[in-house]
Image 1 (spheres, each protein chain N blue to C red):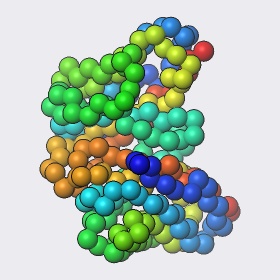
Image 2 (image 1 turned 45 degrees about the horizontal axis):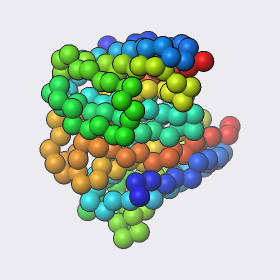
Image 3 (image 1 turned 180 degrees about the vertical axis):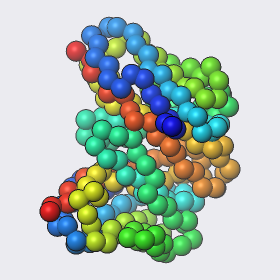
Image 4 (image 1 turned 90 degrees about the vertical axis):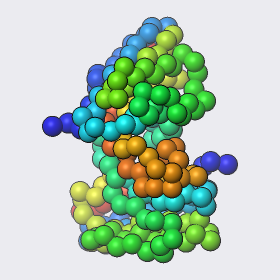
Length: 111
Length: 116
């Protein structure tokens, strides 16, 4: 199937780390992506990882990739209230134009 | 300067009407997309155009017709609107894609369509 699965909700306290998980479907995806959607806005690319990498760090963001299990995660260190948003993972199977987005994880950061 | 813009931002209309949503990008991109986001925030691709040519056409009712007058514009026309068409519609754009390459999409702010 084409469903890219994510847990729907995550709630953390300000200053804690957040970990958002994603199970994707297609091992032919060359890159995997994380997008952020703030309320009332479109999606913005946060970070991405090339499929032959296990980990990528970008300031407060750490992406982990387990190709064997088709599992992708996004860790946000020192989570702030401004990180409250919906986070989507995405793949593009066969390395094509077509993105398949995950179901989205709504992150709520409590002050 | 807005990179990907959509008009209108909100659209409220009655069942059976025909409506259009416009999208423009000033990024010089060759490829544009339409997505539908439902009330549960699930995001599904509908169409994609590359250099004014249709390259992705998902299983979408033929009441939906995209039109790309030039590379910078991709409009979405919807005939005979139904209650189930209520959603947020996002336009996006990207550079021309090289197979197996990196693909970043830039999204517009969305158009919230409510069909009553």
